[in-house]
Length: 443
Image (tube, rainbow, N blue to C red; front, side, top):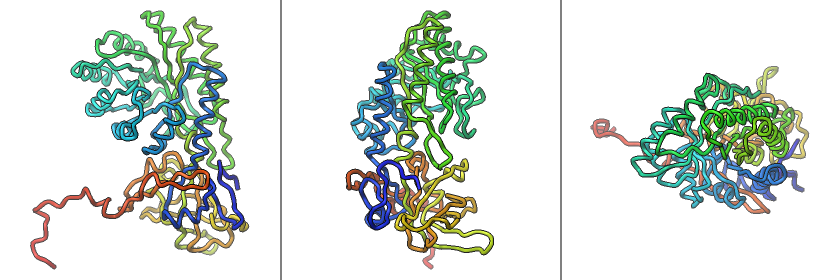
């Protein structure tokens, strides 16, 4: 079994994370429980920062908050000197609540509402990444009414294919994200942005997808974007000073995954930028990247209590846990794969093949198909599923009216609650019964 970050096995044969026994975490905080290895998160942040120091000092690392966000994560990101990539009014509000310096934020979204635009403008978001001509015109109007001139990027579509699941591939021509470079659409949007009085075009942005192992797409996207900067300079005289190349670096979910390190990605991107700038005769821009999954993905482990163990002779063995698609929709959504271990029986031979099923009322609620677990797995054991730090808590739901799990940060033998577990009452706190539905006769 491959362990991530500070995860290890103690003398009792239990999984430990950040020096804390997983069984102690489950006993104190309950299950399902999201556990974040703080040391590994910090290590990943520093790997990106160091890579730019080595290869391209005029750069900025903006953590992609959509991967995982809470106020404690915002505080950690600020301590590590990273900027924040935000994609909603809720994420802006979380950053504000944590006291983050908003000048170091980037605000994304393909369909920002007027309310979100106002929040971004009034809170001093550093850069607004404009996703369409419609948004560009709306932003110019709203900024003018508020007397604010925001700095903006145009999000462009470079038509570069990322070798990943089509649900998380965003850089191809047919995408809901960005303005295509092809057909002259991006150039038209650039001319419009430069003509509008209430926005300040500062740079451009692209993002080709997520969970990418082959960095060739990143190299090509960087080159395509630099060529566009040269075309803009030739056509309008505008010299771009900032270029945001997005994120997308993959992480290890199973033994078959072979992700690149942050330094490998940054070297490919910066080599491509330098070569293209030299070829097309444009000055080197400040670079921004937006890693999310590769910061927090492998740092997350979800702990579950095992309930029913169901043997179907000659067919399959199911072990059911007290969570599932409500706290991890990824297997049902795009067939994501994971590895696991029985956290209180790490020393036991792990040759028993089972399907890890969730508790939700859907046949597709399966977290892992054909997982190998401890031969003596039984009701009451603790299951740990690895690499759940990205898009698990973020995408959690109230399906079947189950509360969302708690989140803890672990480091140096300490465990700190950073998101409290919801209660049934809290889930129903916003429900209202109109007077006409009030019972007339007591049963």
